[in-house]
Amino acid sequence: MNFVEELRWRGMLQDIMPGTEELLSDEKVAGYIGFDPTGDSLHVGHLTQIMTLIHFQSAGHKPFALVGGATGMIGDPSFKSAERNLLDENTLQHNLNGLKAQLSKFLSFGDGETDAKMVNNYDWFKEFSFLDFIRDVGKLITVNYMMSKDSVKKRLEGENGLSFTEFTYQLIQGYDFYYLWKHHNCKIQMGGSDQWGNIVTGSEMIRRIEQGSAHALTTQLIKKSDGQKFGKTESGAIWLDPKKTSPYKYYQFWLNATDDDAKSWIKIFTLKTKEEIESIIAEHDQAPHLRVVQKALAQDITIRTHSVHAYETAIKTSDFLFNNGSLDFLSSLSEEEVREVFEGLPQYELSRTTLEQGVHILDFLAVNTQIFPSKGEARKMLQGGGVSINREKISDGELSVSLSHLINDQYIIAQRGKKNYYLIIVTD
Image: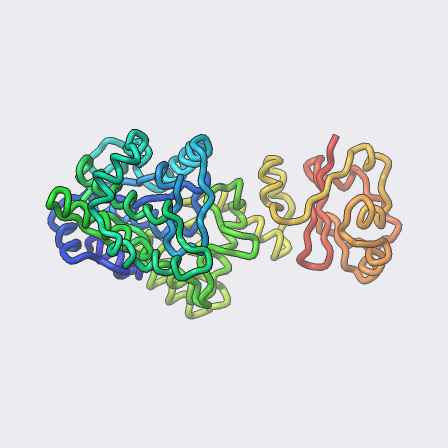
């Protein structure tokens, strides 16, 4: 199965320029995808393009990851409703370093024939003066051609309009393609379907400057089955950086996919074979409540993004939070990892001195912490058996919470009802 066939059966392929599949079948090709460094971490919305490069490399081709240090200073207007904030050079460099580290987890970088290579378009734009650019590049593409792009039309029809800075973006991205074609023999640019217009601008530049030929391929934009944007939750984007999205939350994002989404995403975001995926889906359909597809998807992508250890911790955390699992696994975690387990859940700090003297349970629940808004509400929940400390239900309304309740000599886990958890951190 060749590269294009791989994308096709996985449901990833959107547009492909005539002759592209034949080129990729006949020879080993260098190709690239651009990543916009507007932040210091990629998110799951970038995973489709990362997977495209993985398949490209696996098929024996040479992937280039272009990190847009220059284009990041402008911002791609494609299907955005407003202009992005422009980034300074120091911030951009910080972001670039973060993206390089993340991409290295998925791609094999090096100097070999099929090893991935990282390039930064700031390297060839930093000495390119404005006058040189409009003379040598601006004259190649007509305004009529640029205005015909859907991304430009949508912005012109919107309330915020389109600045000249953003309007020039497709010229800059087009020149990237020409530069990589000229200096690195990159014969194909790939990207999401919203990039088709910018990619074609690049192939047109190559034709006009050097009478050369270049190719293009885009992947489908991933959406949830309910039409909502993929990769977005109530709390925001799902990041690949564990400091921005904990491995537990990352795992839960995939685990909570609907059946329809999971059956689609396991093809797109894992490297499992067609036979493996068909077997997993068949097993899932025999007992959908066991969520076999979701578990296989979440396991695969969590391990590849983070590690086996992160996946195992996510499983134990899920078991603890939802299935009355043991507290014992917390003893093997560092303080940072414990905080990650409870990341997103309410956390309170309490001094060790306070606990040495003992704290009345009602004060503990409503004064020292805000687990309950008042002692009255805390008392009612206690009487109803709805309060637990370290997984043990509390029925004694006169209990004194003390150092004896500490886990790892540092934490207390309070529970209001079945699913509301609170982490109390004891400080010296």
